[in-house]
Amino acid sequence: MNHHFVREKRIDITRLANGLTVATEPMPEIATATLGVWIGAGSRHEQAHEHGLSHLIEHMAFKGTERRSARRIAEDIENVGGDINAATSVESTSYTARVLGENADLALDVLGDILTASLFDPVELAREKGVILQEYAAVEDTPDDLVYDAFMETAFPGQAIGRPILGTPDTIARFDGETIRAFLAREYAPGKMVVAAAGDVDHGQIVELAERSFGAIPAVPLREPEPGIYRGGERRIARRLEQANIVLGLPGLSFKDQGYYATHLFAHILGGGLTSRLWHEVRETRGLAYSIEAFHWPFSDCGLFGVGAGTAGKDVAELMEVTLACMRKATEDIGEAEMIRAKAQMKVALLTALETPGGRLERIARQLLSWGRIIPSEEIVQKVDALTVEQVREAGRCLLQGAPTLAAIGPLKGLPPLADIAQALRP
Image 1 (cartoon, rainbow, N blue to C red):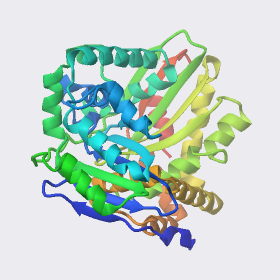
Image 2: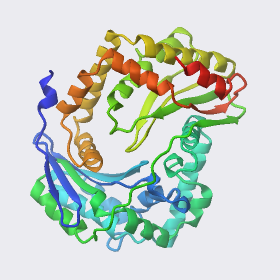
Image 3: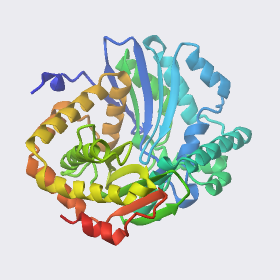
Image 4: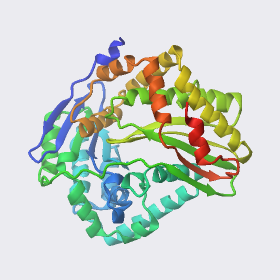
């Protein structure tokens, strides 16, 4: 056992009366403080008429509050050398700031201000809608991004979990301040909010600041999103492009599923690095694609496994044939050397993520939202180390039994029918 995995730093956790969780991880060797607020609400928590609202709220958080203009929000952080950011995902939204430790109080005050007192001024709202529409147009003009949106929509049709995070021009145009406030009151519940800080921080101070900024938010019943139900199918978008962008997928596992780590290792061995099977066969041996990847996206109640690549129109048929053969073969003959390498790469990825305050902050927040506790690195490593070759092969065989999802954009003449792909996946 590499003892780096068991040298966990101290993490202090306090829950406020309204249910909000405060967690800190002091890092004595770090002079900066990274602070954030994570909310267990993202695009899959939107109703149909709210499609894209989580992302718009993230943008609007920086556009002015009762105490600060948009300019002053940026100045208050940047005047002390800090930076501030936000991100929206399928299942969560985060707002983070990094400053010197001595300015942690300022950073958390700004974060509290934007999350509890934003004005959602109609002029700023109209302007930001325009910005998001430009972002939407950029995706539409980028086939290797658009294909993944089409992939998710096809895997989970008619469901919030499958809808693109950005929304659509129609839904974006209808949003107003009232819609935003209703979503915040319903989904930004303190029971699924985590205030986390790492670096040069003091737990008592952060708890006091969090109480001041967020303690008055009323506790409300927690609302679970609709379960994600994988369906599968295909979406082919023929376009006059130089390349065909193709994503082939299958139902994956939740990160809470017992087989998650075996499935993750299977994906990594298949297409997770320069020594992976797909990279070696598709890129290095045959030159069919500039890059190819296999991935496993886990959610709280479901997951999605897939392979994505771009290739010339004339090579589509061969790319699919080789990819399908690699997927089948991996379920039969993954070896011990590949397992050792994949396990080592997973451990390095785990440690690397914990080498910065931002990485530790994200680990704390995500695990508390998902599990209600911090999972020690040692526990994760033990589960990975315990995996056998046969367990990873079996994880692959289980994946390949699922109904496939296919999304493709570009010159697609050589792309085989979905029924043929499904048949070719059977070991």
